[in-house]
Image 1 (tube, one colour):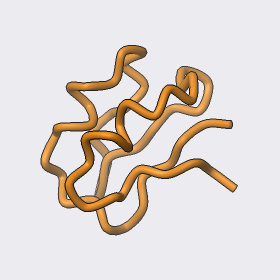
Image 2 (cartoon, rainbow, N blue to C red):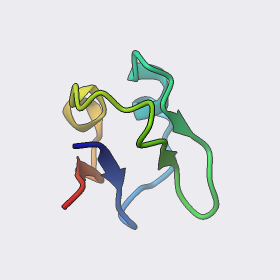
Image 3 (cartoon, helix red, strand yellow):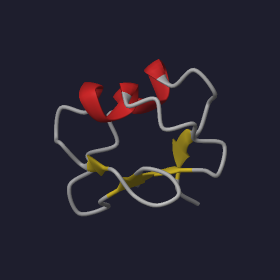
Length: 57
């Protein structure tokens, strides 16, 4: 199951830099995760200071 980035994202860039699959890109108004590239590693969730990265439902 891929991760998503919620509206709580503050565009700090930490998750994008941490993603080993380069699945996170800059979007508007928040970053987005490509579900085809996301491997559910949770690296983004572990570093997000506002808990904006979470598993998609």
